[in-house]
Length: 68
Length: 139
Image (cartoon, rainbow over all chains, first blue to last red; front, side, top):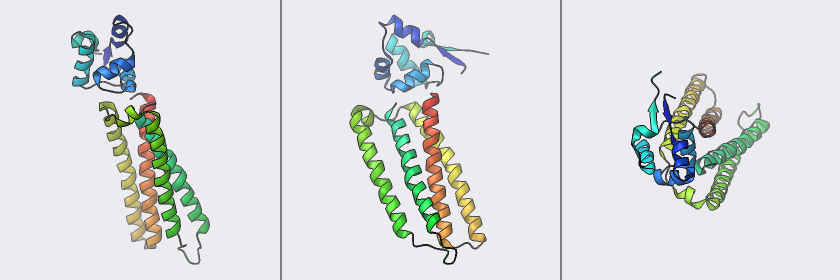
């Protein structure tokens, strides 16, 4: 997957936010958050913005595109 | 396990179990002399049994987690559904082509109908299997 993310770290820095709580904020299932966090599924742009918004950070602080 | 994965398991078990039993029973009752056993009752029983099993298991799954059952599918679940449907459509298409070949070979209508039913069941098994594999792999 060419897209990496900082979701695990951001959850830790936000009071160890649970995957279920993040899923609730984003409007997806907990399983989808797990898949995104483990780089098994690349979210849509809308879901990516919602995840960034849940942490109160810009999109590029959550997701990184690995060029190679 | 998400509600939709549970639903896929229910479909896999119900289609595999009920129609597996149907085809085994059909095979055993096949009479080469007649060529066409009386199986309308068997088919109706299989369909009624299938509906009862799927309905009962789905209600149980929904009662165990009502909020998940009522929630709409999210983007990943929709994508998994679409990919599973595509794989199932290939299976169904292959079955239809096989049935057409059967027609050209002048097989009897009963046999053609069961080839089509097999294709339908196989397509649903492929769909459910694809969904489960995708959910398990996190794709």
